[in-house]
Amino acid sequence: MSVLDVLRIMVVDDHISSRMVTVEALQQMGVKHISVAKDGREAFQKLNAEPVHLAISDLYMPDIDGFQLLRAIRAHPKLAKTGFIILTGRKDGAVVQNAVKLGVNNVIAKPFTPDVLKKSIESVVGRLH
Image 1: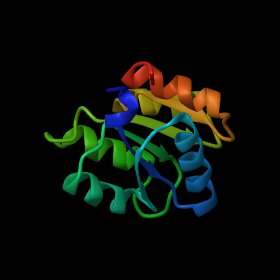
Image 2: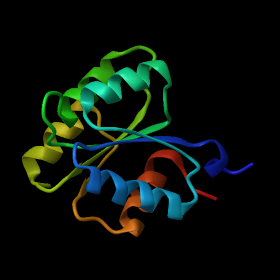
Image 3: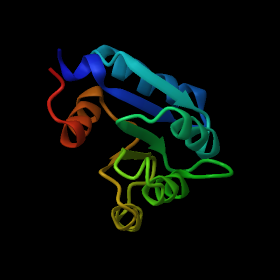
Image 4: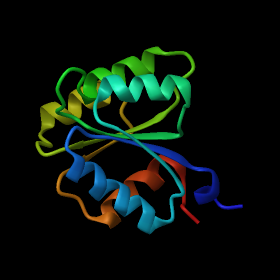
């Protein structure tokens, strides 16, 4: 059984087109278990009900943004070890620094290539074969 058979990933993004680009890239990699959420609030509720191995979240979303979602996950005993990758259109030093302080596993600049996404995921969960 490969990692791809069991790996569960949630994609969190308020823009449906960005969500679908990420989901499509994951599907092309062979990821079978993908859930989606339109914002941090929905993501946290879904994660509480059904945890995943890795959350890939947009940074800038209304209501609860990627930083707030990451903070909530790291503070929650059941979810604290969930892998977390932030996607952002503004990958500057301050964003990366803040994300690292909050316990992010990786930060990816948008737009990203499937290869960049795969390498980022593998740095968190190991090889995808």
